[in-house]
Image (cartoon, rainbow, N blue to C red; front, top):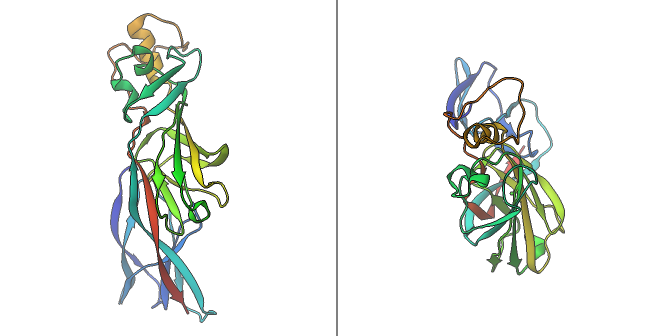
Length: 256
């Protein structure tokens, strides 16, 4: 679904000893609270938009295993300015400074408003204890933030992205996000004590540049048919934020 979903469901299976939710995107496992009825195992499941999960019902006796599931709390919202560089040959300026994260289609510069391609967002930030931080972001955005006492693991949320983002920290690729909740972990050893550089490369759809060509009578695009006209609405684009640093509180679930 394109929207977050809370769904009641029933697994038509015999009574289970436990039910787990497996996330194929990051390999995490968490317990699911359920009840047993005449129809089977019933539960309520929360899912992010466009998410896919596996439900595993356990019946046999397995060796005791400890599963750690995270619970995140907001540590810091990054509100510093970003330096944004744009892909060449698409009508946008080489570089711009964003005082805050906005939809490209609302920018006063027409080259940015109609831009389609890759932009890179860059910023720098400082941490006290890099060993305990984990996480993530075509234009390039950059900013600086400081973390006093990060938790064992830190998660970076990009808020909202239109339409796909690739995140690097200190030159190391951390991953790519293409759907909600727009979050990613930082691999161990990527962060260093003091200042760190965060780079987020964002790509949107080709639609806005096509519409811009129709409105401005330019020729940055070439299509065999007039799929879009000057009167069509622009599509939201870019890193929309807010960019938030999360601290992780661990929840421990012992499976027997």
